[in-house]
Amino acid sequence: MQRAFKTKLKLNNKQRTLMAQHAGYSRWVWNWALNLWNEAYKAGLKPSANKLKKFYTNHVKPQYPWMKNLSSKVYQFAFMHLGEAFNRFFQGKAKHPRFKKKGKNDSFTIDNSGQVMEFSGIRLKLPFMGWVSTYEPLPEIKTKRVTISRVADSWYISVAYEFEPEPTVKSRDFLGVDVGVKVLATCSDGTVFENPRAYKKAKKKLARLQRELCRRQIGSANRNKTKLKLAKVHQHISNIRKDAIHKLTSWLCKNHAVIGLEDLKVSGMMKNHKLAGAVADSALYEIRRQAEYKADWYGSQLVFADRFYPSSKTCSKCGHIQEMPLKERIFDCQACGQVQDRDYNASLNLKHLAEGYSV
Image 1 (cartoon, rainbow, N blue to C red):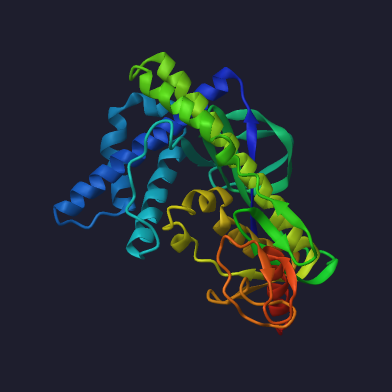
Image 2 (image 1 turned 90 degrees about the vertical axis):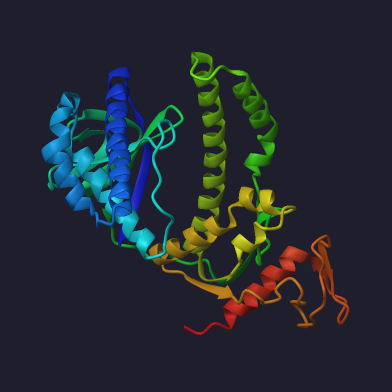
């Protein structure tokens, strides 16, 4: 089973420049190949990544001497990634590949000519790059390739490696989890994970920086400074959201054997303009995505309720079903008189569903 590890690099100015040059090289090759692919397709030809790479190596690369000073692995992976992108497009799994823009798509992939790279500690030796440092220790891993990317003004290294999953000892057999926008998750054992609402809290700051950016002259140094400030705020929002979701999904899968969750149609919820902002800020689909692969890591099982399963409308005590408008936060059963929090009632119903699941 594969696992990914991503951490921030601690670079000096010379190393930052080298990273930026390689990211620009990868972006240049991608855009050149994508443009030629589109032109060839319009002309009725059948382009492929291998054909484009051979033409580039023999006829285009010799015209640009500056490319000799950078790692040749960068452009090879750029062609490979473009071919994979078109394969996903033809299979209907992704949209048509788009051109990359400086500052938004700064990343590149390198390898060690097929040889295994071993990493551990806070220093690692990268092919062509030399020794670089990280802010946190790396696990003892072996890999054949690494991807380096930039977010705002920070550089990150991503490593995929093989590992053996180790099931953890479970503290509870069954748990129901109701995810939402008011709170991130309400569990049937009474545990509540608060929604950090990072985007909502930073909305005024983002609006101020956007207005400031509009006033800056295009191409000026001050405009670039404001763009960097804006990118840092977005990065901060993303980090807060990721941290909250990782803590939630790790706690669920490490400590519970069978977990009941709702099969939410997030794309449909995003069409409601009154809820779209809150749903996006909560990243509900990301919770499911992480829970699915972490369940394999830690030996848990996920039970998804049917999309039309009335978890919020059903009394967890007697099973009576009644209408529950979204504005009503307390479930008051009209049959047995049970009164409890709406989300907690839904989590109990999801727990009952998990208990009825047979392996």
